[in-house]
Length: 109
Image (cartoon, rainbow, N blue to C red):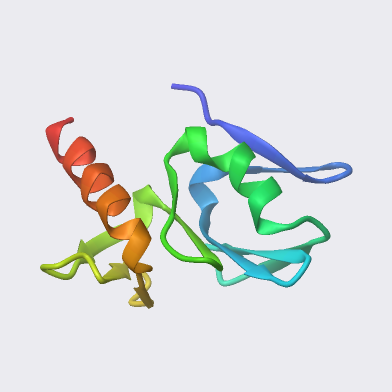
């Protein structure tokens, strides 16, 4: 089994499985790691999301993209998610259908 890594800095590669959350902060993106470490990148969330989305990441709001590996549960109407680190995040109304489809596709596997 190969571990998929992503280049986050010029000479730093990290496993995708270590990243819990991508949070947009104006023209920067904060990568939140499982260890609690936060790394700030000088890229917009939209640019970073394009690299991460094919690897099981899902945009749930204007400023948050979650790693599907850390999704613990969703509310009944998909308006919020709970991650494995007990972080509760709101889901944008327009993203709820995407979240529902994502959860269903993961449950089928």
